[in-house]
Image (cartoon, rainbow, N blue to C red; front, side, top):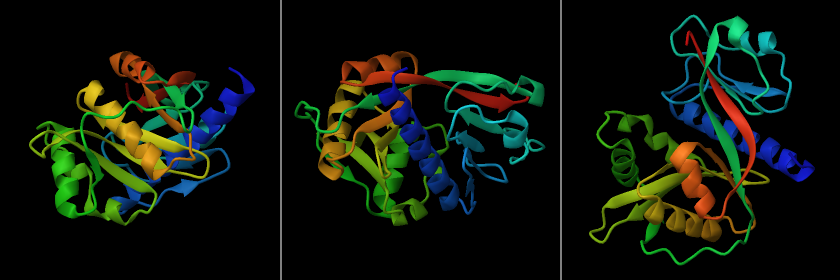
Length: 234
């Protein structure tokens, strides 16, 4: 990993932690940023970690002591893939790659239009499309609309319905993209066009794995470093 990639991973990890914090706040849960990790004292919303490391070589025992491992489902986002949490009762849930796309990089004209959800009704329509009938659309609450650094991007089909989308999170150094769904051919060009319009000066970061990683690389991203998510009791 080059020095430039190391700096990007640091920025991507902090951006992702800020998004996790925003999601937790929307559910009434306040987390805490420390020098080396963000953590929440109680169980975070579904799919969201209880802690995110912000620097390499965090002491595992110190990190685990900041979260609730008594309730089922505790998880840690190991942003630098350098922790061993097995002795604390965790197993690796999945591994992924941080990705980066430079600010100002060319984006092909999207075939589909996009808009930022700015009402509870639009957010619900987006969430239902993201959820795909799994019953978890209520994860995305209207309180997110009050966060000035969160943009829920909806990609429309010809009939005006939500066909694809993503969440874009602004921080000082990067724009983070997460929760990408829908056909990659429809989602990525429109979402990248949205980022370029909303936050043109910021490089784009996120993380993906498997086929989703391959799709991101086809749309101009590069891998910049590994991460792991650990799940307690796995």
